[in-house]
Length: 81
Picture (cartoon, one colour):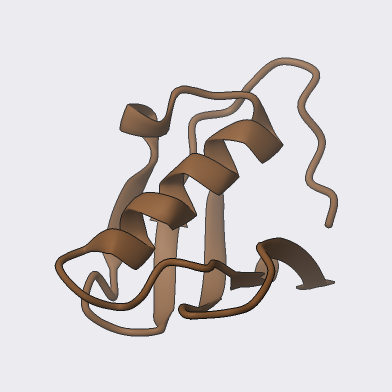
């Protein structure tokens, strides 16, 4: 599954907000330094979609807030915000 993410690092809370379609706004507490926000993003998405974090791939936007990610399809997992 391909999703579009608008990442907000340095947030007070961590949350996933469904924006419609396959678009998500994701807030993480980690700062946007040394890949910490991306690691937090992967961990949060892995829990949400019930997949291993190492299987989630950033296809575009590794160093940007707007990202395109590929998440393996998980039988029974739903796309919900």
